Length: 200
Image (cartoon, rainbow, N blue to C red; front, side):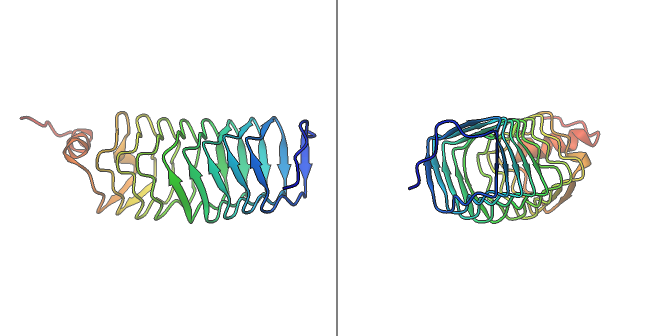
């Protein structure tokens, strides 16, 4: 591996880090522009307040890595793995997020507005307060996910599995539902949102 310097410049552009093992690297307030991070590996790394413009994370693997309050623009995560990662407060705009493997993690307050997340397995993911407005989640699994306070306005939830998900404060009436799978608790909540009075 090419050893990464301890104190990197605040703006890194057109770098080739393809296949690098970045380990537990720590970066704060760095702007990455057109950096190739394909097939990189991180374990316990921290990226805080960083910006990624036109970067590639294709086929990369990130274990217990934190991307906190980061801004991703036109960045590709094609075939990447996010295992137990923390994406709290990060914003994704015009990013490629599929196919993507996700194993747990905390995506609290993340903004994914308008992102194509169809077919992804987001089981047990912490998505509290997330902005999923206008997302295409067709065929995705959100089983057991923590969605309390999430925004799903105009999100496509066709064939989505929401069984066991925490839907507290989620207004499903503003989403596009079709063949959406709910457990009893979720079904009762949806009925109440539509004005029904559910009695034992």
